[in-house]
Amino acid sequence: MNHPHRRNFLATTGIAAASMLTLPGSSPAAEFTLPPLPYPADALEPHIDAKTMEIHHDKHHKTYVDNLNKAVAGTPMAGKPIEDILKNAESIPEDKRAAIVNNGGGHYNHTMFWQIMAKPGSSKISEDLLKAWGSDGDSLKKAVKDAALARFGSGWSWVVWVPKEKKISVASTANQDCPLMFGWFPILGLDVWEHAYYLKYQNKRADYIDAWWNVVNWDAVQSRLKIGMKM
Ligand code: MN
Image (cartoon, rainbow, N blue to C red; front, side, top):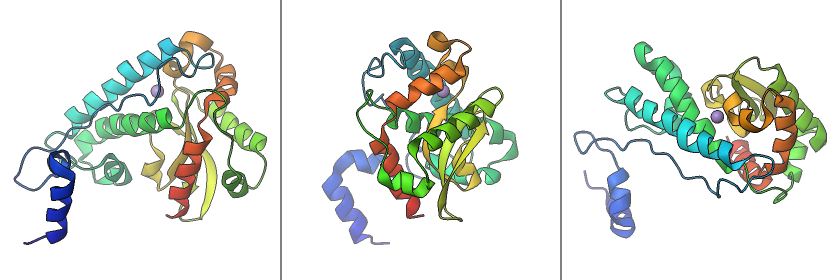
């Protein structure tokens, strides 16, 4: 088949783009890679300490990426975007499903988590988000906090866009379950695994959550809301 558009695309974007294309019978699928933090590890001080960020990103997130690559190898999921894998989790071969969901969710959730944080006080909650929520920012934060505190053990608290209902909602998930698995698009996600806060806050999850609001990147949250609202 002749694909003039594809040929032009490759001609203008070069070898890096070409190596990302995975065609049947061609070179092996690209592996998942650990994205760098979008800011220095100490950028979120004093609310989230540098040591926690280093371990969380360099060790925990890296382990999810490494184990995801091992889990997808040799399955029909190899080479697929992580979003597609999680949205179709029920089609993952049963013997690999837990490993791919746990590590794939871990990879997606953390990639988003780094992006929706920024140095303290660098942005404020958007009017679009408040309008979608239908109340003030304090009530949204309280809903996310309540969901986070009600999550027994490890998990996440979320603001998600629900495409079927064309509205946002607050929810929590267990372990590394990702909102994409439930047909939702995550707008904001708060990691409430102990590894996210234990060095600085020990058992005081509520104190961590209260401090975390200082480092939310509301501009990134707004960008995700706009993506969600088109779904
Ligand atoms: Mn985490």
